[in-house]
Image 1: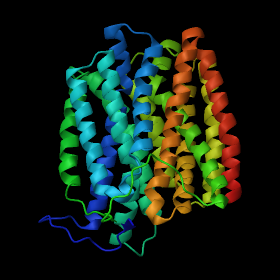
Image 2 (image 1 turned 120 degrees about the vertical axis):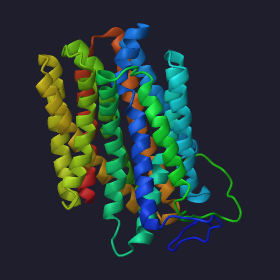
Image 3 (image 1 turned 90 degrees about the vertical axis):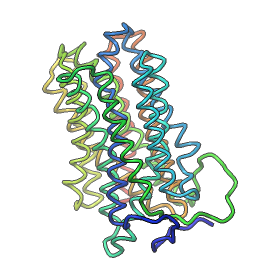
Length: 407
């Protein structure tokens, strides 16, 4: 039996950080990995200009990342429940280091696909493991505090990292030389330092003496909890589909429809969307779950409607404001989905069930974008995006209402 530790483990290593310090190390490593995963967003236009491939190829390169995440979540994302949280976080960071090295030495289309797939595998191994690790480290360091801060930090560093990546990539592309190499070299160093620090974080899972039989991801929930889980899963799917739009096609929309060619702007717009997601979770952290869900639905619907209008009238201001509104709504919606999911799982199943919700979320990141890529082979960008945001709104409304009834 694998159990979550409530007291520090006895460890043969000569040095271990305290649980409170380990909490912040894992948060920083989580932030670095998620930022690295979105560094290429504003750089796709440079790869396109250099190699001359069409826009739909961008969706394939992006989808390779999401496919890597999905495969990783399905096959290994839940293993931290018995293999250990620290071990899985460390493995994830090491995979990201390999990905960064590949970006440096093999950056044609095939190399980008391989590097992005590896990056996705690392993220898939990290998300549920780090989320559960943060919760457990904080519970040992501050047992009187409750889960609120750990839940907020995990979702903020997740979306905050996704926000920082495009901004950093755009700044490198706008102001520094060799923008297709230098960002990856910098993050190679950052990730290496993160790996060293993670190695000294306390473990929070007691490894079973007898290793359980391996199986891919599955969800074990009581029958009465499945309705709540499905609502949370659909909400996560819809929210990450919005993120997928901005991390894959926002630069193409800016350049092709809105006639904005600044590399910094191509990074700043996705940054604004993800930053709004992170900030909304901080600002409304003390709002009731019901209040957060109502606000999430309103912001999501306003943002999605505005995105459709922005591409129809070719307005940069409307596109940016609508993206920020949608991002804020996604942040609140996803935080609620994570909270609902975590509340459904026993401690020894928490990594597995969180891995499942991240798996569904990243399917939302990949599948709609792939469908958009296929549609772009046949139809222009503007009608495809209008259909896309309409479909996401149709998914979000019933999922949000079901979560609201539970709240």
